[in-house]
Length: 140
Image (cartoon, rainbow, N blue to C red; front, side, top):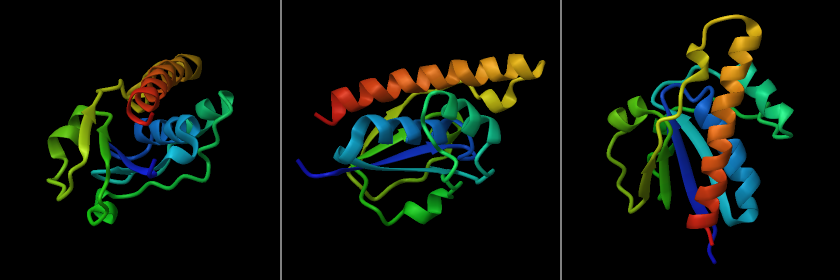
């Protein structure tokens, strides 16, 4: 089986797409090359790094990349993880299968630090489950 190429898109490439990239890499192993990007770049959110580390996934080395960096790559899959990215995603000259799931944005969480961390954990678990199922269904 040839290695698949997966692009995960979000608005700012800071939280949800970074978490998805981390889990997809974890579950896919050598079956896929996974990158993430944003319609904009906001830097990798430190809370996302910390919450992923709690689950043993290190995304501290990830960078926040702009979608324009990947327009010439022939992806097999494009996954949008927020409605804004889906609506603002440019046309890709590729045969990529497109998938979409609008995950809640933990960067917009308000409350105490503990309440905000819980929102990050909640989104992390949703993305983890989605990523596990995606790999099981699409990369076998």
